Length: 265
Image 1 (cartoon, rainbow, N blue to C red):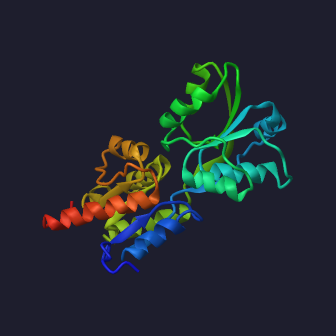
Image 2: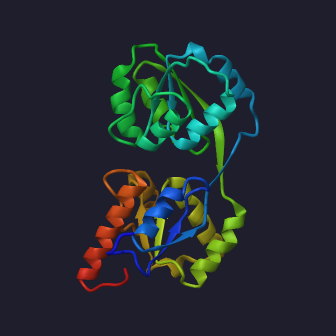
């Protein structure tokens, strides 16, 4: 346990989906905080599988497969089945995605230095020959940045939706109660989807005025941009887009604010 415990007496909302919040939860507890787990993401298979089936039948005709998240990796191999298969080269975004791929027995052939779509394509496109075939396996809410940039560079990028991201309704009541009772000191967002689902609940229950004094931490610039576009004031956004970096930056923010004698936004 961290003897300093900079997050002591802070209740921290974790909006990550079930099964992905453990690392963030442990980091908050290690630093003395109380994690409040309210998953605002749930992941399901697509309603219609025809496109998935077609793309997977053509899998070996591609030069590259791109997987952009842990969910993407897990759903890809769930749909692929357990049979061992020599796959095309695999590109991933992020160290956690790389680790997930390794758990399934495969090594990433390319990992970008920057864990965002724009940084990924800037590096990845230098590896592609004209006409190279790329399959981007992604969730239904993922942005179109990667496919558009690859196609513009002269390669061919097909997209296939392998999972859907939805708002778990069981979390809505719990979140509304926590906000109305002023039980949240810090909110953490690890994707634009968590921000959008949070805002959806805020709007439907007219809770905007309840969150003015809550510290807001986003894992990276895309989530932060989504939050700020809708009027949220983001206090913490690390340069490295991981939960560990987000917690470290959050602690720096709190220590700096407390040194100045502040306790709220």
